[in-house]
Length: 119
Ligand SMILES: [Zn+2]
Image (spheres, rainbow, N blue to C red):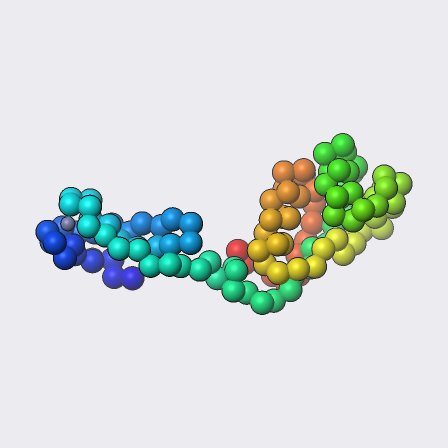
């Protein structure tokens, strides 16, 4: 998008705006603006990504509940997963993987993603 976009109504320099699912330009002087719908390339990515548990994770209350909700395994089995890592935890599209990454980060779980995750 042209950075030097001028307002059609008053000629002021417009500023870019970005909202969820939309991008556009707005005039700070008179409020004239337009938005175009914008799809995050992450949602169009058809590749499948794999999340592997890294070696060296230690079980905690927080990560146990998270891993349990993903795998449906019990605490003994999860301990074994952590010990036998890398373990393929999840396979899915970019948006799902991103969501899970946020949860793993929150719970302090170490993981790797293949192929390289660029979002
Ligand atoms: Zn204007």
